Amino acid sequence: MIELPDLRLDDASALLAHDGKNSELQRDESPTEYLQRVIDSLCELSLKDPLTGLGNRRHFHAALERQIETVARSGESVLLLMLDIDHFKSINDTHGHLAGDQVLRAIAHCLAGCVRPVDTVARYGGEEFAIILPNCRPLFGLALAERIRRTVAGLSVPVSPLLNLQATISIGGAYAPEWVRSTTELWIERADNQLYRAKSNGRNQACIDQPQELSVSAEEKGLLFSHLAVDNANPFESGPGNVTNRVNA
Image 1 (cartoon, one colour):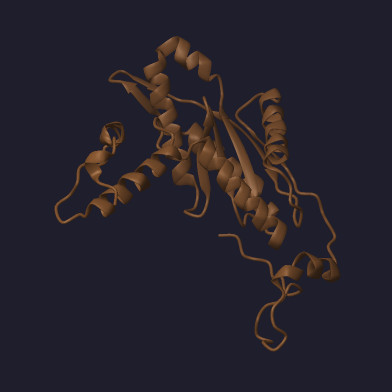
Image 2 (cartoon, rainbow, N blue to C red; image 1 turned 135 degrees about the horizontal axis):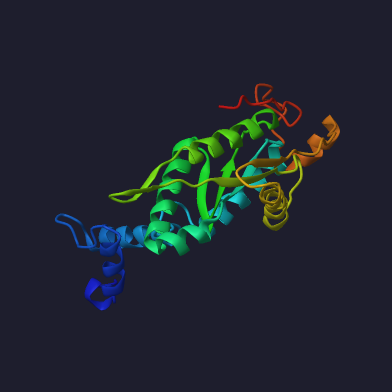
């Protein structure tokens, strides 16, 4: 049996307290429940960007891997957006890093408010963000990216009592190849290429790499789903040949 006094939890408690989480043993809380709460809270912190509160790169990559598996199994349309704040270095150089941090937090909050609960928004690094949009049909991808771009451009970020700043973003996007088990590296590279294109074309715009049209026969779908085959005695189960299009929210 593990005894709490035998564990070195001081650093963990300090880390949780710094993040505003209660790190003390609560009344009527067993040592096991307390230890599980500390572990769960540390796991949550390990996946969160401390400045913006969004998911960090580790969280982003894990979510992207899950979506690749979903696309390979179901052919669902999933869009990855990479977003970069335009001329962010000049904001830091002109107004200081504290002002830059305020701009980052404001844009992060704005991005989180632009998407659905099912979507994933993460800080990819520096002034770059990423958004994973499952069940996003190609017909709506560019319109959605443009809506996000315009919303951010309309922000006015107060960085001092007498100064508000505005910033724009460039967006590059790519759809995962349907019915194909791709890799996170290739998917990110395709979205990054579109981001570079948006930057090269003058910034403050969105460029989307539309998905390739892949023809998948019913027989090929059957092979893809062979390990998920259902008992023929249950005709009410949806089989691999019964793939329906979902409606984008």
